[in-house]
Image 1 (cartoon, one colour):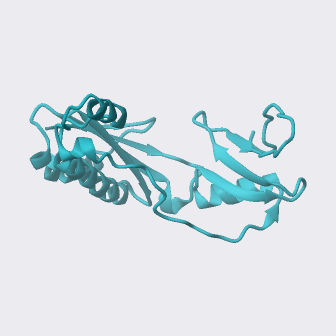
Image 2: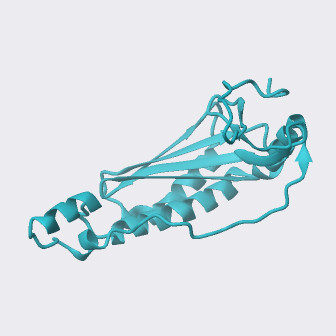
Length: 199
């Protein structure tokens, strides 16, 4: 396995590069010698100091691309978290039986009288809700919701708009600016507009 450590708009200090390479060595048992693992480090200024250092790891295990990221107060803390996560993904990828067939293909084979090739083909996992989270929502203005979302360092934020009294979702777009989802039940669609205070 070859570990490539790079920075996104930052120069990676040698001490952090060596730390990343050393921590990634524990994954060698799970990977082929020809596999490249890419560690990308970045700094997000808008986040709080406790989670402004970002580490992202990407690698391929048995033909599957695995990716995970974590944020922390230091690059070392972020690396500790993200490497734990990617290791769990890699273990899961190695333990899953190969040769899975999509549910539609398995049904077609059964209809044709063919036997499934494996238990995995017969019993495809279905996506399901495994956790429900409840929290109190206070009415607030868009600017306040944006400030609170930035303070928390989240990528989305649900709130009740104090002006419209509707449930809204504020989210961060890939370009770095923000979007606002305003559900309308039985009404006409209104084209998106810019969030005030988002720059």
